[in-house]
Amino acid sequence: MVRFSRLGLAALFAATLAAPVARAAEPDKLLPAEADTVAYINFKQILDSDIVKKYALDQIKQALAGQDAKKFLEEIGLDPMKDVDKVWVGMSGSTPDDTKALLIVHGSFDPEKLFKAASAITKKDGDKFSMVKDGNVTMFKYQPDQGNPVYGTVVDDGTVIAGTDKKLIANALKQSEDKKKAPIKAELTDLVKQQDEKASLFVASLVKGKLDNVNLPQVPIIDLAEIAKGLPKTNSLSFLIRATADINLEVTLGMKDEDAATDMGAAVAKLIKDVGSLAQTAAAFDPKAKPLGEIVKTLKSDVKKANVTLSGKVAGDVVGKLLAPQEG
Image (tube, rainbow, N blue to C red):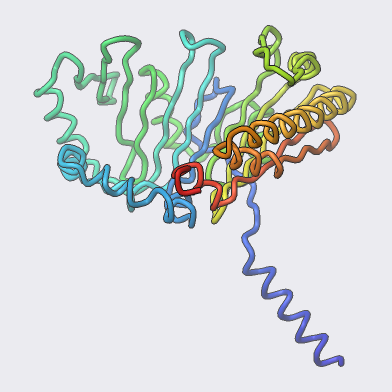
């Protein structure tokens, strides 16, 4: 019996080591100091997930194999399926007009090919593309038909960046040369570290004061009044997706205090109940709405201290039904 128990414990320990363990995300050091929202995309993990392999990988490969796309990717020496690893985005601003953003792409790149391709594009379409200098920094500038220009450059053979203004690019290049951590706000750093680096995607945002005047839509049967009351008391918002054989989602509202979290938690629980009733009714009238009902059944809410979390799952077979409802 003693020997069996020891073997059982050893097997349990080995299984624990083999299981995926959440790892606190460390904010990218190139993120802009003024950022109030950080997004992260684990590109390689998404492509390697069972659900993408089953339902989307062939379509992605076909799109990249198109004549124009293939030619462009060959010119810049990039294979997105192999060379792109992770993507970070740092954003700030309260409206689309004042939003600033920096895109940070990590992977394996050929700087020489990238600059050569950029130079060729500027000669071919000089009205939209140009090479500009900011001090000793050479950047690639794209001017769309409408809106502000976008600037980009290569940091090294492992990083490419693009931003909404030259200052963001210059600061990121400077940050790449030192060993300091990301200069973002302490509250945002803490929020990012609460996310899982092994997740497929997450967004972490400081929203204090930004939701004060949000007008929620009027939805039949569903009363959003209590949700609306809680929005001005929301300090942070995070959204996380894990793609495996299924898709798991988590939305977390960081409230100003525990009382606000209790009230918002009750409002979210009621919302789940109301949406469930609506989904059941919809499925009764239209069989195509059945997958939606299956998703709603997985929704759960939880309140821990000042945080309210809404979680749910989209099963792999449900994804298949949604993509090909005629076969469901």
